Image (cartoon, rainbow, N blue to C red; front, top):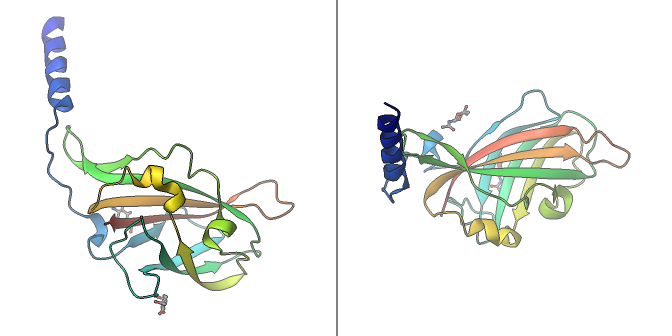
Length: 186
Ligand SMILES: *[C@@H]1O[C@H](CO)[C@@H](O)[C@H](O)[C@H]1NC(C)=O
Ligand SMILES: *[C@@H]1O[C@H](CO)[C@@H](O)[C@H](O)[C@H]1NC(C)=O
């Protein structure tokens, strides 16, 4: 009995280890046409109502080639105090099928490189004043080429972006925004 179970397990893992070409997963949430974003936590200091992706001439641009600089056009609202300093943590997932079937988000290794990004330096977005904000954020991901090398073209990815308050004197470093951005990379 045990040996049969063992054989079944070995069989299953052998199939799993083969370079089987699983069917591509459909792009979720219309990400083959446009970026899809939503807040991943409720009632935080920042709410984000729209994200658009632009090329360096501020023309609509999609899908995104992460090897070249691009621009995020972010429509957001700061419900609290002005933010003069912030840290950002990013996780990357790819939407793919596994050998057990079904499509799901699987994490991509980021080697800790995206755990402690200085939001002010990286996105030039400080200060973030109170109230409505219309941000044009030029982004250059070239310093993260180690991670970008791991990403395949024409596949759906999602970035879980969490921002923390690092204002002078703030020791709590509470999370002030969590945004999920789902998009196709080219
Ligand atoms: C599609 O977006 C919604 C929020 O707009 C989210 O709840 C859902 O998990 C997303 N679907 C996938 C497959 O990620
Ligand atoms: C940025 O987004 C806002 C809100 O959707 C839009 O009105 C504005 O035209 C966009 N700016 C550019 C440069 O595309």
